[in-house]
Image (cartoon, rainbow, N blue to C red; front, side, top):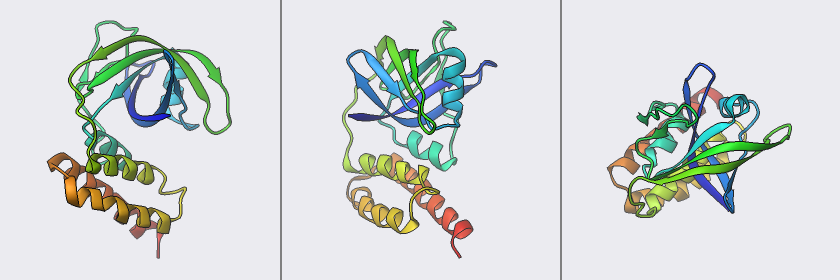
Amino acid sequence: MIHEVIVTTISKDSQVHIAPMGIKIIDNQVIISPFRPSKTLENITENRIATINFIDDVRVFAGIVTKYKKDWELEDSKDKTIVPRLVLANTHYNVIAKNFKDDERRPNIVCDVSKKEFNKPFMGFNRAQFSVIEASVLVSRLKMLPIEKILLEIEYLKIGIDKTAGKRESEAWKWIEDKIQEFQKVNIN
């Protein structure tokens, strides 16, 4: 099963990178499969640590993939062996990369979970939140998938927004719609 999360990593010069990503959890290990090239892959390769943020504020997913809001508040750790987590994270796992399974497109990084923290209750996702996460995945693949397929799926996902969105989900959905329109203006006659 793939879990949609926000992965925070840190560079050699202490710059935190925030990226939405699907991960797998098997027993007490996390498998991260970032695209090549990516800042996430570069950072984990350099220092072998990351933080997995489980989060119910879907604006983080939409904000990052659309690039309309990339900076989210971090809770810094005085421990330099831990990557800062998102303040909004319901739960977070600190992980240490143990094994790299190379792949020309998406290597698998097998990580041990060194610490799990539960920061606030997770109430589950409603249909609008699910729609924003799915639409965020589609936006991240605008250059890979036919625009007709994306628009068709967005049209269906909008039903969940129209019926169940709160303020946060509506804001995230607007970013997604704006990004798709922006892409169409630049890439479609």
